[in-house]
Length: 205
Image 1: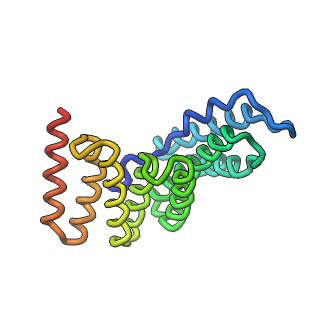
Image 2: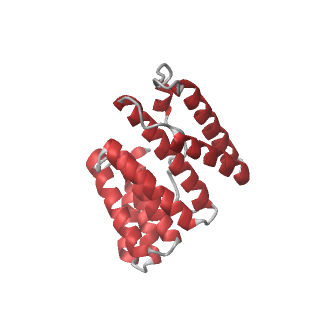
Image 3: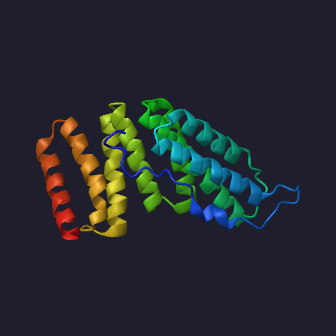
């Protein structure tokens, strides 16, 4: 996989499994739907790990189409959890397409997932930062370096605000940003980030 695609969020939202008791007036069974959705995502993840990409694509597409077909009539709590599942489905398929070099498809799905995450979690959440990193990595693959840098900066700012300046979990964002700076032939800035990564990794050990 692309070196800059670390930390892709390719696992289903475990919180979705809490919707296991409610049905809508029209008989739509959330419990059964979510069990099926979860099964498809798990099978897709397993196939992805095993590099059986055709099967992974089939399962992720099935999960996405299923999530898109869910009715809008739901309680506020249900709608939040179902939209979260939809965002996960979009991100899963985007990650697969990204790894296959289908960058246009990946970018479209990443952006859709990002909009849902912003609405559900706010502009400054860890989930949004992760999605920004994924889009930035996709832009790097497409050599849209200026756009990628803006997103890496934004993701780093959000994660720093959440975790603090010296948290070891910042290393992935810093490494990816440093790789981009190397591509932009800005070695001094890249070295500064790499040195910061090394210091954070040392503090973690």
